[in-house]
Image (cartoon, rainbow, N blue to C red; front, side, top):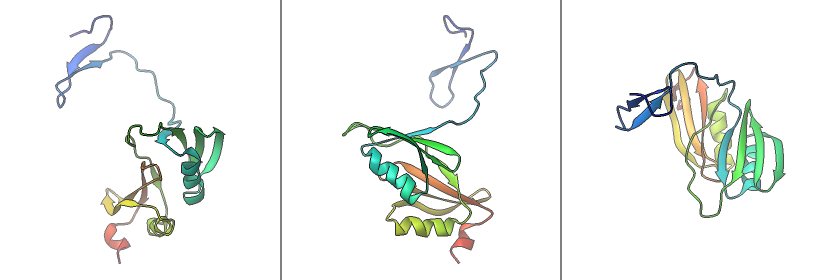
Length: 151
């Protein structure tokens, strides 16, 4: 079935039962992941968490409503969320670390809330924690297991 005014095809999504436009033809390429955005009610405080606790560097911080930090090779946009706005949700950035046990100890020393402790994933281990605005973050170490870390 063709959607009016398009060259695409409309299909019914199997799990939602909703119509989804399926584009035919060439799809423009995505070049790189440029930035992960997160919302907070305290841009300076959240920026300090990413720099002081996680070791990010500030790329740009033009106002109290916006900052861009770089952690590993990923830019994180820290944007003001209106007071009483929607709760944090969305994507969880995951960062690879070489010693997840040491990273966990560092997070606990800094008073960070760990929401999901060590657990196995294919080829390694992950854990999840929250930044001060309630946004989820994960760290990953490959080549180990939960059992090995708990010895």
